[in-house]
Image (cartoon, rainbow, N blue to C red; front, side, top):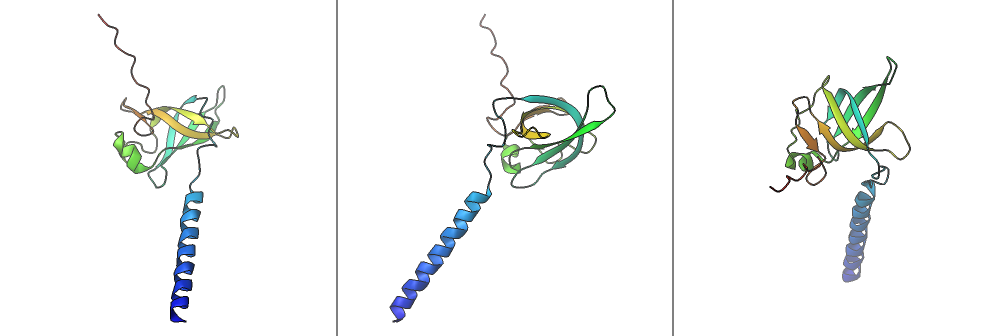
Length: 143
C-alpha cells in the first residue's frame, strides 16, 4: 500500500513539473509578429531605454513628416546578456538621445518592431546581439 502511494505521488509530482516546464516554454513568444523580410529606418528621440529581461526595449518618438506631431515607437531588442556580447551597456542610451535605427516592423503595422541596428549618439553602430547586425562592412577590394 505504501509503495503504491509513493508511486502515485512520484507520478503526480512528475506530471506537475512537466506542465510547469511546458507553460514556461509557451510563455516565450516567437518572432512571427515581426516582418523580417522588410526593414524601416527611423530617426528620433529616445524616451526610454528599458534594460530588462527577457528583452530590452527602446521607446522612441519620431517626428511625422510635414507636421509638428510625433509618433511613438516601441522597439524590441534581445536580452541584456545577448546584447552585452555584442558591445551594449545598460547606459548606452538615455532619455533625450537622438538615434537612427533600422528595424523589422510589426506585421500588424503598429509603430513597433525588432531592432536590426542602431547608430548611437557617439557614432557607434550596434546590432541586436552577435550575428544580428550591424551589417558587415563591405569587403575591401583586392589590389
